[in-house]
Picture (cartoon, rainbow, N blue to C red):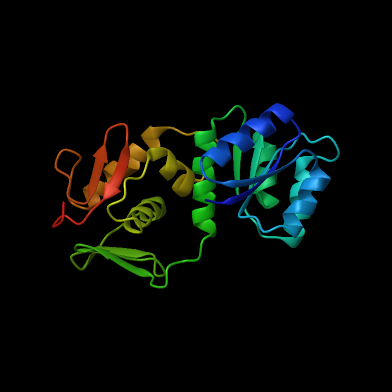
Length: 228
C-alpha cells in the first residue's frame, strides 16, 4: 500500500483513478489544480505523486519543477502528450516515470510499484547468492561457480533484479518498467531476447532451465536449481 497524491483536472478521470487505486489498497488524495497539488505534495507525507500535464492554472511541467525544488518524492507523469522531446525534458526535470493516456489502472499500478522499488532503501548487503550464482551489486559483477560472467550492463541489471527476488514470479511488464524504464509501453520481445542471452551465459536453455524459469502468460522467476 502506498500514500498516493493524484493531480488531475479531469473530474471523471480523477474520480475513476482514485476509486480504483483505493480498491487496490492505496491511500489516495486527489487535487484538480497544479497549485493545490504542489501545496499538498510539499506539505504531505506521500510515497508517490501522479501528475497530469494539462492542468487549468499552470502546466504540469512547471508543477513538477516546483515539487522537485523542495522534495524528492517520486513523480509519475500521466498525460496524453507523447512527443519524445517533451518526455526527455520532463525526465531531465526530475520525473521518475511517464505513462501516456489512455492507460489501464493495472498498468499505472505496476509503474508505481517499479518507481517505489527504485526509491526504496538498498539492501544492507551488496552480495547476493542463489545456488552457485553470486551477484555483487556494488562491484557490478556476477559469477557462476566462481567463474565470472561476461554480462552487458542490461544483462547485469536484469539478473540483479531477479536475484533480489529469488523464487518470486515477475511479469515481463514489471521487468520492462523496472529494468528498461521505458516511459510508455514496450515489447515483450525485448525481455525475451535478453533472457535468452542471459540463459546462454548461465549454461542453460528455455527448454532445459536451471536458474531462470518462465511460465507462459505469467512471468519469470529465478530459483536455486537444488530447490526447483
